[in-house]
Length: 166
Image 1 (tube, rainbow, N blue to C red):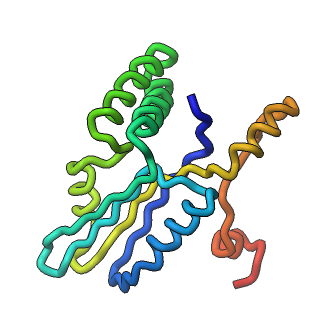
Image 2: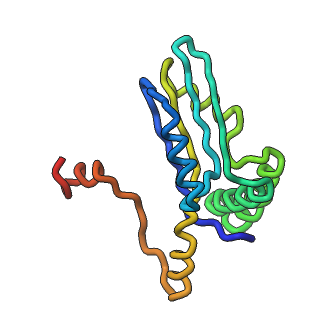
Image 3: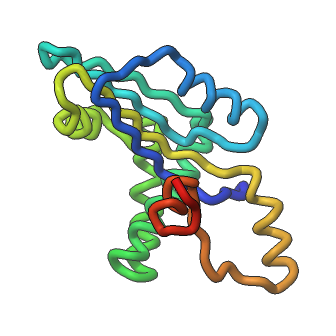
């Protein structure tokens, strides 16, 4: 089994989208550099009359889709039902990856996302793997270290907490 780096879910909403392709280009550039892998990404646009357009992308091969599906299914199953739940979740997730050749979002999920978007708005939901972090994690584990905490910080968050002035 190939190593999988930390996964991140990103959800972005646009009330009045001015979509010029720069967001997808940015994801593609990060993927091409090897910093990330796009596990699944779906963009949904709802035009003013309520019609929905969606596009989905992934960097995964069919084999990787099965592997990621099993890995994510095991994590979900572990949380829901312990070790036995992890085993069942891994099987179900792997099968879903094989059947759908994708990780994550099916047509029903896209419609659920679209229901949350106002007419004329858009949304992007992406699951990315931080492939750059695999060697770092391996070095930490190889040095008998354990992750104590991790999170993402942004200037806006630091301003909100009073660490920076806006």
